[in-house]
Image (cartoon, rainbow, N blue to C red; front, top):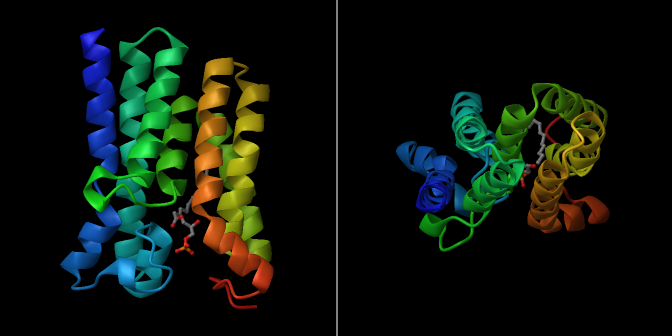
Length: 195
Ligand code: NKO
């Protein structure tokens, strides 16, 4: 239906808004040229500060949460909700406003997960937090938590469409962290908690 296609396009465009880049520019910095070069909350915190980072985290999270939250009310079919979920992550990671580059999908994926299931999002967050506190690496926490997220949603919700959407999202997050993975293996990844 036309309405659904418009909803997909709207979701993609909203998720494409590079809040990290925009807020960085408001502080007079190009975050794509500093730190890890990523537009995510981690690199904004790293290169600008905690307040700016938290603002980016909230805005990037909402880009995932809002489209999926409303899609659940508008569309009865979980296949349609699943398509919107993946579209939000794709919009953030392959932004039309960033020459189809973009972020790594963690905050936006987390927003999607909160809208899909608060319980699953909470458990995934605990895995993220545990990995972060033990290792000191945000990237490793993001990779591990997202890798478990689709398994957790499969066991707790059981819907195949939703599981596939979260699996695809976690795959995108994994691929987007390939440089972080290289650095983790080399031992050159930046720690957030110094050990
Ligand atoms: O600059 O390459 P960098 O070191 O910045 O950044 C690596 C980092 C990129 O991601 C971010 C966003 C940080 C958000 C932190 C809170 C996330 C809490 C829970 C995450 C769960 C993810 C589940 C996604 C399921 C699809 O990694």
